[in-house]
Image (cartoon, helix red, strand yellow):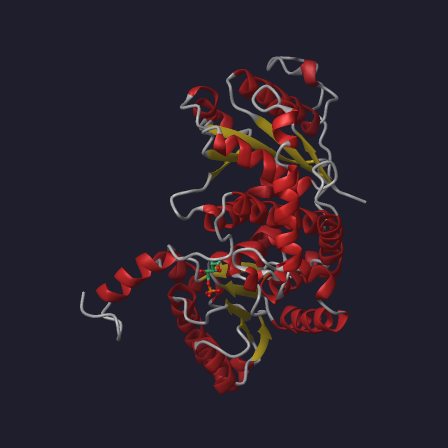
Length: 441
Ligand code: PA5
């Protein structure tokens, strides 16, 4: 059963059904390129089949390792950047209690989860070290290339802390590495030190890797059912591989609409949520879209806002700023819990008209009012609704977006699976740092 819905009524004043339908032959052709592995970047299509291709034994090994980590630590630090960071963070924050890290471990049986290596900031990492100083800590360092500077530096710092505290052999039991099966400095180090290691498949790039051990191990450490997540993704996978028709394949419908709006000069997409648990799902989506499409001087600039918070901030820009944008609302069908607004005898704050209504009810009216206002303000908008905050629904959502962004990349005729632009800052930084082989800064 699909947990996802796509409503594009508020696109119709800007894009006709005929225009959308006219894309069908092109989408059919590109669908074949996915299925037969004949399109751009076809060495990196492994993500298409992860939900059916990952065995129960592979999931079992991840679950077992996650359980050991859960048993041994109060604090779990996931070290990585970009695609080796955002998927896990998105899933953990979407599926966990909002204040999971502040709850005592006994409450959920899960350790506190923190992230490192996604910046080069000393305050951030020094503050993290304060936080973990007197706690039992485990680490998962994640890097496909095994050479990325940010996580490598964070790992070096944290490894030293663990070895000082537990000794080399004690630290070894608390460190798990997720990396390439053969290449990279991290793989070499893991072999030398004898760390437990999980492999990132060769044919899956970073931002498409949330359903590999890259995402699954930290997600399992947070106590989330990764089999349910994979089952959800399986639904996306089976629909998307069987159907290219825009009436059945919502990923392709979303991709087609994005592409057509882009060709009409709408070069900026705002993904707008009304549920704070989606905060890092928005970040994950931005990376997926930005790195996949932004090349050869093409691409939709992916931005995000969190409503209603940002209705008192960026909402002004969306309503009346430069008309280069379209908006995609990302909603959660039902919150886990409902809070009713109480009636007061003294209606001093004037809120009795809302008495007995839930916050979700009011939030929904805020969404509907915003969608109408933005449509009137000439912002084409559509709405993706994910049924609930379950691993099953999130698995579908991950697959939905991956397939849609890859399809938009193909429609733009770019390779959605490389990121050559990321190398430019690195080269300059390495030169400035006098890294061997990069010349003098
Ligand atoms: O999507 C990508 O490929 C990138 O964002 C990478 O995930 C990111 O640069 C981190 O790379 P690595 O896993 O090699 O450390």
